[in-house]
Length: 143
Image (tube, rainbow, N blue to C red):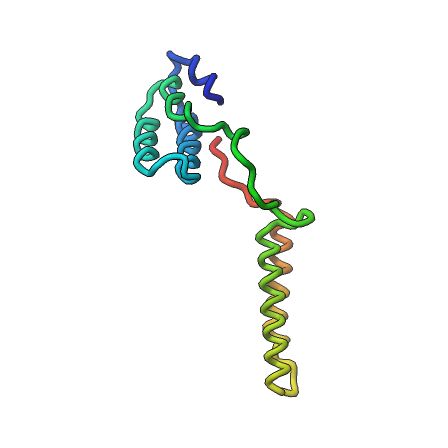
């Protein structure tokens, strides 16, 4: 649904899904700093009070469309590995390094970091398996 579609539907009542879509655009604009908190609240009140589709168009007329917004400044992952899994892996490496160095410094004859490292590896494996079955994290769709 685009703003042009909304502008031509003068006699068609707006659905809850249409109101939610426009509200999401306004909330995103508020989160990006394009609208003040007062403007965002005012527009949301108007959106949820709108009866017809053409009434919704005025709330997003001065906001950029989805395709006009700049993309994220960072890539979603490296070589197809999702960012949350990369963070988990990096934390596992740092923690493993700290545990092993602590074991070396402590002078204990048995390898006590084995138990925590085992569970750290299991958590990383489970995270990778879950990500493999689910795919990338997704926002809830307004359908």
